[in-house]
Image (tube, rainbow, N blue to C red):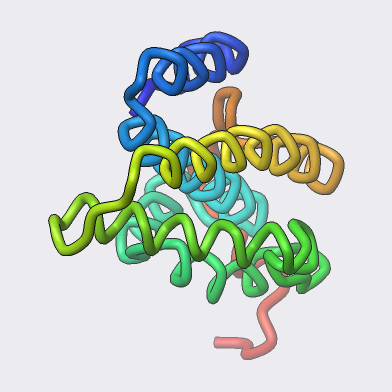
Length: 164
């Protein structure tokens, strides 16, 4: 997986070069990890925006394993209670789920896929990565690629419903 310190165009170029050089399975794995990382970073920003501190956000996100877990908690932190599939569309989500399943099978050594299938899926995910980045930015003003805003003190109990 490439660090987010690299410019987006550079990472996209490296993913394309993996496919071009015949490393389609590596391109599939890396592109899917990149998608997950962008979604996780955007979710961290949503958690911080909800009033949690940066440390609390990282602790919350550390407990989430996999793409499905990210989807399940997305609504909790979205300011308008939207689901991840409402933002990304169901078609994109289904493609991500299918590719994540392929990636997990390859990483854990339980299944192998032909290079042609990996190439096709990797190219699809690279194109979807562009769409995800655009949709997240249009929705939240943040797409998971830049630096995170930090919060040192929580503002969760500014309007308490139970007076202690």
